[in-house]
Length: 477
Image 1 (tube, rainbow, N blue to C red):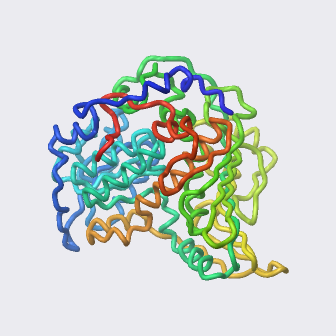
Image 2: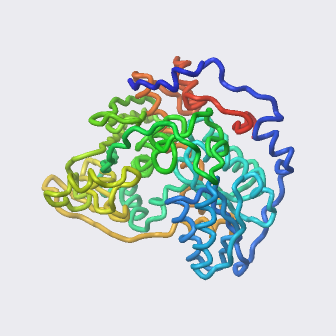
C-alpha cells in the first residue's frame, strides 16, 4: 500500500459538494454554454477551426498533426504558461499558417463561437472538466489519454458528449493504426483460437526525479489555473512540466501515462469492458525522491463471462533495467547505456532508451504480440511449434479520423469514442485504487461501483483529493 501523505492530509469526508453557482454546470449557464445548439454543418471544403489547449510536448504534437490536415485551421492556442503560449504561436507561423489567437484561460477561449473543436493536451486532472466545458460550449473534443483523473468524472464526460451531441475522440491513437486494427480483426475472427489472456507491458526507462523544494512561481505562469480542480499547493519544479505525472493530485502514474494505451489495446483484443475483480501490488522502488506513484506495478483484472470461462487481463509497469518480451521492444543499448541514461534529464527518457511497450494475447492456437517503438506492428506465432504467422507494420492517422467525424457528424466512425476511452481509463483508476488501498476490489461493471467498499468508491469518485471551487465537475451535465 502506498504512503500518500497528501491523501492523509485531507479529510475524505470533506468532499466538495458545492452550489450550482460554483460548479461547471453553473459556469456553463453563466457563460451561455449550457444551451444545446445544433453542430455547425461543414461541407467537405469548409475549414475546421481547431484550438489546442496545453502546449508542452504532447500539445506541440497536436499542433503539428492538425497543421498537416487539409482545410484545418489552428485558430487558437491556450496555455496557462505565457512563455510557451507565445513560443507555440510563433511556431504555427513558421509552419506557414496564420498566427492563432492566444489565451491563458480556457474559459475565455470557449466563449469564442467561431471555434469548432478543442484539442486537450493538459495534465490529466484537467481532462474531464475541460472536455465537459467544451461540450457545453458547443465544441467537438479531442482529449488526451486518460480522459479522466478518476472513474466518476470520466462517465460525466461521456454523458456530456451524448447530451450535447458532440464528437469526442480519446487520445488512444493505437486504435487508428491500420496494422493494429487488422490485428484485432484477426484476433476476433479466431486466428489464435479462443483468447483467454491479454498481457500489457509498460517497461519504460524512467530516471529519478530527485527532490525539489518549494520555489517561486515562474514569471508568466498562472499557477492557480494550472492547479485547477486540484487542492492548492506551493509551487515546486517537480509538480510542473512532465513530472506532474508522478503525483496523485494531477496524474495517474505510468499506468495512466504510457500504460493506458496498452490497457486499451488489451481490453479491445479481449472484447470486454469493465472487470469484475481487480488487484494491484507494487511500489516506488529503488529511488528516494518526490514521486508518489509506483514505478513498479503488477495488475490483474478478472472478467466473469456469461456462459463461459472467465478471462484475464494482466498489466505490468517497470521503470528501469529490464528484458524484452515476444519481440516487443527497441534494441538493447551498449554497455555505456546505464551511465549515459542516468545523466539524462528526468523529464523525458531519451528516444533510444530500451523500452518494451506493447501487448501479448494468448489463445488456444497460438499467440499474438503487438507494439514496438512506434506501436504500429503486430506478429503472430501459431500452433504447438509456434510457427510464424501473419504480421504487419502500418500506421494510421488518429487526428484525421477525428476531423473526418467532425465533418460527417458520425460518432460511430470515431476510432476511439469517449465511451471506450472512459472504460479503458477506468481500468487504470481501478488498479490504482487497489494499489493505494492495499486490497483486491470486487466491482459491479454495470453500476460502475465497487461492491461493499465505500472507501474504494470514494476514491473512484474523487481521485483521493476532491475538487477545488470553481473547478468542480458537475453532478449533472
